[in-house]
Length: 282
Ligand SMILES: C[S@@+](CC[C@H](N)C(=O)[O-])C[C@H]1O[C@@H](n2cnc3c(N)ncnc32)[C@H](O)[C@@H]1O
Image (cartoon, rainbow, N blue to C red):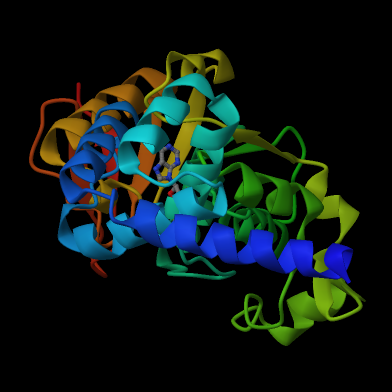
């Protein structure tokens, strides 16, 4: 009887603790954490501050932490906790065959110039990377010498990218002929064929961390749906990083929402049909 009662009492105590501790979640402390995240990762949550603070509070409680001051303290000492929080805050939408116009330009460019190394940052769970491989495979056929590196800050997404298995919703836009040839079903998921995996690799990295330069130089960079997360300062920094990562004749593809102001490093190219990309300025 007593043994049966104890866990219940502990549970009640825990709930009481939670309630009293929750009062210690001061938004001003949360703002300090958000400012530090912005400085380190460029992530700017100012237009969704309330929901982000709520997410951080839930995250803290899940980890038995009951104030933002304690959360901040523990983030300073635990790399794992920080990684988990970043994973929680950066769940971005992505899917196969998203905004395909730029993949058409890529295939066209590849007919004119040698493209061997492509960087896809951020790659989230890998859909964009595999879409690029599928586009090249189905339009130009030859994958020899090609290497595509996918990078994202979210380690959960990177693990999923390595597995290469997706929901039916994620592959909705894939043409059925491509689906039949290059995917196989595993329970409720659709997994990419090994041939697609042979030319890709995935890495968990922060674009603003110096280790990004250990990846070497690229002929093409896809950076779609990332810059809109950043403030102006981090956008400019990202542009400088792309400049350093691209070869002299390198090409940069940005997403529709990733608007950048005119800058001396890149020149915007607008094709007759309105498709855009950037090349390095002379
Ligand atoms: C909306 S997804 C874009 C995925 C894909 N490029 C697309 O357009 O479908 C945005 C991704 O940016 C990643 N991200 C945010 N900040 C980052 C940073 N500092 N370095 C690398 N990746 C970052 C997030 O983890 C998220 O997976």
